[in-house]
Image (cartoon, rainbow, N blue to C red; front, side, top):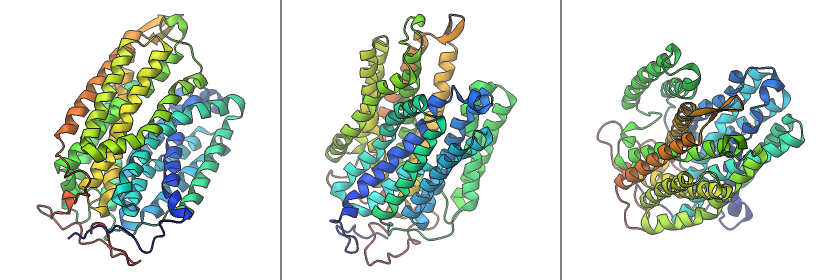
Length: 507
């Protein structure tokens, strides 16, 4: 059953300082999450010397965070829908802060990898925050806030790289993690002060079996994708991991279809407005991530390569900084386009702009100015696409499942990024030449990578247009998921009543 969304919440003071700071505080936490993912990158070349570990062991500083984030995002999203989004948001930030403290106190590689896995829990900040914004904001303010929240991923990544490089260059490397720990603790305090607990809950028992099954399947899949280039795509471990992923996820899928309260409502995912949005998220994640990967490597290549600029990691971060600024400035524009034309049009336009950006990169990847222009155009497209994806999800699912549905959407972006990383690495490995006795990717290899990313962006643009059209613009559509599913229990029957006297947006 459904009830009309209220335009005001009597128990919530929307004019006070705390209410006005809810959006900035959540955006700060989203930026912090992206910074956390990025700060370790400048440190990777020196970590073998600093920790006494091998280069392959050090690479797990990135892999552990990727795996933990992918596994925990849908799990924590579902927990937020059931037990309180603010409560789970605080948990994810606390785990990130604890991971930073551990990293700041040790040089042991095993502890560092474990701590980075704890930091991966912060990836759930964005879907949880978007769900809180849906529950707390009126429709006329919601699109702009969601667009800003989505853009924090790119903003934080652009800010984190140069900031971390500067800290590492002028201070002990542990200082970087003390800084992120302090920022994380500040985020926890701000959330407790400025962000209310969402009244929208779904009751029932948490699907522990589904969570464990999804975790096992995703670990097998993403570990195979991320390590395939190192271990060999035809090696027994990689083949075994892919086979294990298929088997585990098949069993998990069957379990989800028969569970009363599944971790992921697959009947909801099967609806075109939700399922195609997830496919578009995977493709867009692939297309976007190639820009960051390739640009950083290309501008740091030595001048002897014939195309490289020989920039330092600090200079590289400054090259990418305009992309983050553009994402911040364009998030309101993206919201206006979605309000006028619908988020599926914004998504399609964004993916097309990403393809145009890669076209600029293919046309000229020797000039620093053109490299920055091409990277910025890709970021413009990413801003449009990433702001539209959660808007599509919010229009297609009931309020009681927004955190878990957005968590799955973020998971699909993460899988797309992991596949992009593996694909770019495979392309560059096959296009190398010796420069001063060292193998380096050729310019042609980079251009091929840009071409692949552009092609994927074009496919993402086409998929976006296949998503069923939105209702009349300017109205708040009733999610199609509110209709009773073809089979299985009615998902909205277990929504808890609001205890503060306010009505649910959708029950």
